[in-house]
Image (cartoon, rainbow, N blue to C red; front, top):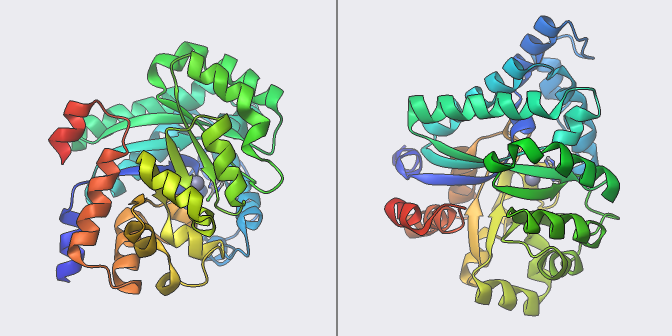
Amino acid sequence: TDTDTFITGLPKAELHLHIEGSLEPEQMFEFARRNRVSIPFATVEDVRAAYQFSNLQDFLDIYYAGADVLRTEEDFRDLAIAYFDRAAADGVVHAEIFFDPQTHTHRGVPFGVVANGLLAGMADAEARHGLTSKLILSFLRHLDEEDAFKTLTQAQPWLDRIEAVGLDSSELGHPPSKFARVFAAAAAMGLKRVAHAGEEGPPAYVHEALDLLGIDRLDHGNRSLEDPALVARLARSGMTLTVCPLSNVKLCNVASIDLHPIDTMLRKGLRATINSDDPAYFGGYVADNFRAVAGGRGLRRDDLVTLARNSFLGAFLPDAAIEAHL
Ligand code: ES4
Ligand code: ZN
């Protein structure tokens, strides 16, 4: 349709994408076969049928299990290449992607295997599509502070190729305050900071992410809408929210796409962006997310343009590069 063409033709940045969450079932079988890893599924259809979640933890359990097929530098490179090919087809020209090193180092896969594989995929995307990208090292918040510090130490040889640190995994019971010292250390190393907050957790966790982690960007942030003073603060400071509509519906944080608050966020002056989060698990890549809210919320073209423009305003790119994308 016209809207489809308009959406894919709109240049955009993707700012909230977990590379492990782009592992499609077909590739899961391929990596399982070549690495001789067994998986508890017989067919691709069986895998897809298992992707029904009632909350974040339901999803995380299956997401960490899926990541077990990722073993070699080639796996991480091929995973990234497959994501960037799909992103480029959707009109993504710049992507800032999360990776969860602890998911891999805890299985005996060295940090460097993960980082070098992803960096090879990023170089391929720039060469073949002109798609630029950056890496965000995300800490698993269900693990302790000491493990996050160890991960930051393992990252030292790659720090010049890592843009930011992030915070993901099980939100409830693991407030940002748990990682205040880790984020302070990352800031001292010159890294930018982002955090998942207000996905399932209360507005107080968003306040903590701002006050104790010094975040430059807020991942999800949906529950900020429950706190008018917080909304005003986010709007006033021009904070970018990386919103993930299909993820919100799949994880039952929003009852259905036609009830998604994306347009409320825009009307309240929040710098919201549209992202795919874990596209292989949540039913779509970034253009699918744009289409879902365009249809479900009846967004006009000027709203879609604003959302795409916001993605560049929120990107960790030099001002001149942002300007060139607007
Ligand atoms: C995640 Cl949707 C979401 N929330 C928190 N942590 C995550 N890791 C991967 N996807
Ligand atoms: Zn996420």
